[in-house]
Amino acid sequence: MFYFRIFIIGLVALSIGNCYSMDFYRIQIYEILCQDCGSSELDCKAILSKDQSIQESVLEFPVGKKNGEGFYIAQHFAEINPRFRNRYHLGEDWNYVGGGDTDFGAPVYSIGRGIVSMTKDLGGGWGKVIRICHSLNAEASQKLGYEFVESIYAHLSEFHVSTGDRVERGRWLGSIGNSNQAYPSHLHFEMRNILGEDLGGGYESEIPAYFIKPSQVIQSLQALR
Image (cartoon, rainbow, N blue to C red; front, side, top):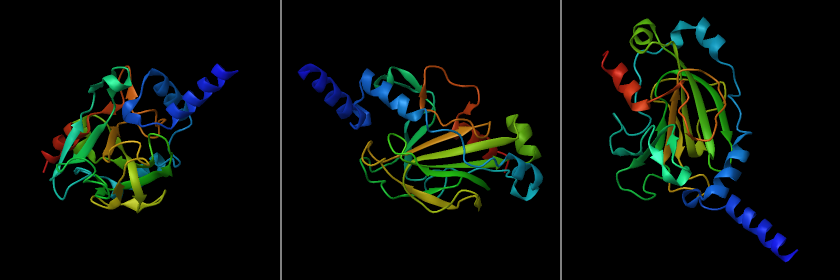
């Protein structure tokens, strides 16, 4: 009984521990918790298809006054992270150049006009998350090869929009956080070319085909200006 109690206490400690010191068992618990993260709260594809005024031609970076000014990518898309069993990172982690928690509370902006499909505090490793659906105009769609894009902003400290809101490019969505001190503060930013899929866990052993490299997509569309 003594050893069983020690085992249970250990599991609880791992489940609330610092996500940057995960071992194999901590990752397993994290993945189980994230099975309930689910898909977007709002199916916005029908709205975007009917209203061409929401279409976007150019996308901007989610932090910094212009082109991510003052920020850098601390962990790149598709980068292998040994802390997560050498799995691939499915987004980009943006940090302020000052390092540490100097970016805590910094504004996070919408990369383009669109519809907010989810604003939810998921707790755990995700924290507060915003999901936005974007529709691309004909030129941008031809350039990229797909019509819709979804942007995901995670680890936020606060929300400034709500599910169902229509937002413009550069709209202040919320602020950078640290998922209740689960991580050093930063923005985890993902982009996908399919709308409304399950959020997942931020890392995978193989990269699903609908995940796209955020910076590459944004820079590709900026070249159309």
